[in-house]
Image 1 (cartoon, rainbow, N blue to C red):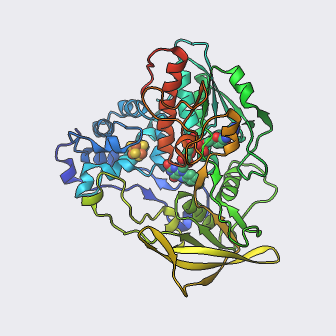
Image 2: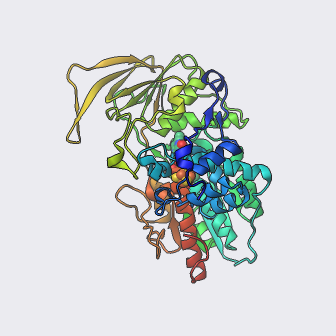
Length: 489
Ligand SMILES: Cc1cc2nc3c(=O)[nH]c(=O)nc-3n(C[C@H](O)[C@H](O)[C@H](O)COP(=O)(O)OP(=O)(O)OC[C@H]3O[C@@H](n4cnc5c(N)ncnc54)[C@H](O)[C@@H]3O)c2cc1C
Ligand code: SF4
């Protein structure tokens, strides 16, 4: 345990943010991480409680009390070893995880939780800066070949684990760069892409082969999903060439809003807007960019994707940014006695909201109104929820000006033709059907085809994708060797 009385002596220290007027002028990260002394103080606050709820609140089960203690004792080198024992990419989660561990921290019952995520962030960044993170090539090769389809956090975590177990791993990615939504969804201001590039280099040195611009199967006619593929490989070719295939293609089918006027110019999916800015930040030239400069932007959808559209629109210099949420405004403070140690339902205000955004709750869009084929306004109505059912509030109709509308209502499922190409069964929500059981988990209905991440569980979080990638790697390893795996579950 850090310091026995640390939780009584020290307050929680939040990571700093660069000022709004400075950070909206660029697309780079703006969080100021804890320095070594601040991280030590945070580590000292950990009570090392007998039952560490933080550990089960964390989807990868990070061994949080141990790394808190190591940071408190200035043993950063062992802290990164502990962190890596459960999480392949703590520099990703240390930046963009919503930190369910902190909701579960025992100190959160009647005080502010330990700043676990900020400690994780500090450990990972220090380990990279000190050169402690090096490739770990396997001592022995098995000669077994695995194809991983999709290079998001699930595919990356699985590929790294499988390569370290000695298998020959090839990652197929339809886009021109590795990283999935980390690369082309999440804006640079939340996570710069050098963090992915460093891991890709590490994994290449461990033997992973990355093949970008290669689509496996098909996306279906007229698909608006991000796709930079120059080459296509069929599911049958992959099955013939590899001993096992892991599908980690994410859940890319965006939810649409099929109301009158949907076809107007200026109404776009968030995932048509965000990847363009990520490409520009990477130095690519685009023929034409969807931009928000001087426009009245309405973002429909109140989640992470919507918030990222808000932040990007403000960086473009939008005239106004409004975000719609169908549900009523949640309470600002949760009732901890009812919710702890679970993830509470409460109002969440992101750094992007703080940069300037009008938030509208309990509002629905009835129609997009256009002029000469371009969107100009939205017809809306207020809604109320009774017994879980939504009803429109009579007389609450409004017309709101909008030159750019971004649909950020989440993702319905994986792109179904990809699953169909492999002939695998889908679950009731259209995801690849596979359990997470310790024995036989992550297997689809087709022999030697496995599934993990958003493609299996539906749209979720980076930390869940990493967990599923790690667990699926273990399942694939056991399938290939016919013996219990040494990979952690
Ligand atoms: C805008 C946005 C912001 C988000 N912000 C956060 C956040 O702050 N924190 C958080 O934890 N989570 C966030 N998420 C969710 C998180 O990014 C996802 O849950 C996570 O990336 C899922 O990982 P994955 O590996 O399963 O799939 P993905 O990251 O979706 O990667 C799948 C990859 O597979 C590729 N692929 C798909 N089909 C094929 C095919 N047939 N052939 C070849 N390649 C294929 C795709 O091109 C893609 O690169 C956000 C999501 C979005 C859209
Ligand atoms: S990965 Fe997320 S939940 Fe787990 S310790 Fe880090 S911040 Fe917490």
